[in-house]
Image (cartoon, rainbow, N blue to C red; front, side):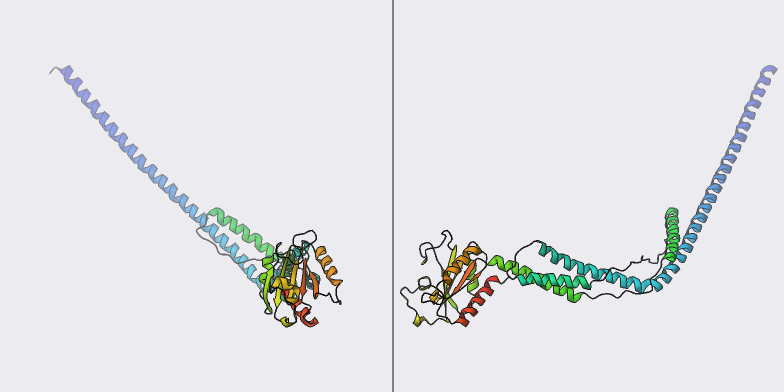
Amino acid sequence: MPVKKQATSICRNIFIDNTIKHDIIKYNIIKEWGWTMKKILLTIVIAMTMISLTACGNAVDNTKKAVETYNEAVKTYNEQAGEYITASQATVDANEELNSAMTAAQEVINKGEEPFDEETLATLKAAISTASEKQIADPELLPVYEEVTVDENASKEDLKAMKEKAESDTKAIQEVAVPDEIPEVPNYSENITAINEAKKAYEDSIQGLKQITAPTDDFVMDRLKNIETIAEMAPVTEDHDPNGQLNKQGGYIGCIYFRDTQVDRSKLYIEKDNVIDIGTDGGGAIEVYTTKEEATSRSDYLGTFDSTGFASGSHYVYGTLVIRTSNYLNGTQQKELTQKILDELIKVK
């Protein structure tokens, strides 16, 4: 091989060899640098983690200290104010219960419905008035605090918020002025019972009046069945009405005749042996009118025959009814039978 070509080949090989060595060195430098950077990054992460853990640990410790101080304050506060808090809250609760009973009763009164017995309304008003006079004012209510615990797994933000609240509440507790006098819890049980009983009596009286205001024949007969001396009854019809007044202007809208076993049938003049034709002599009758005025007018008319040979027995107006009893019953029997009939008709079931 010529000397020139040989020299060229040698130079080329030397260049290639140097290039390869340079790349290897470069690779090693880069590799070493990569491992160094990884070590640096790992060190930074570990350091940051340690800092974070230290910060969280400090947050937990700081929160615990604040909560411990708060809990001590709560314990002392409850020892000083616990009895007052319990008594004052019980007083407020008692007042609320009484107010509820009085309000419910007043709402019934405000409807303005008429009772059968006006005395029930007066009794209810008196019960409310008595309770109102006995009621005491609500005492001052103190704030209620409870001990708390720290959740060590809570976030840093939650721990911070808990610490701030504990510190704030601790300060608030220290500023509470506890009254020296413990309120005496009132006992309104008798007043509440009196109001509720009077309210029921008043409502029953309202309903009772409704039941004797233009009731149906069926209702009247259903109630008459409960009177042991009444043995038979029947309602009049337009085809069978001795007075001929059913459904006429000013007349009754219903009339039920009944037989009473207290009447001595041997003293009766019986032409047709049925309860309607025998009439009030056999026991009595319940005449039903649309209005109280019509019932009163009918009773006044019957009253013109009292103490005469044409007297037909007793007659009393209740609601829109005229309750009549036989002239063949003595005065005591008439009154007792009338009362029994009335009691059944106004009874609320």
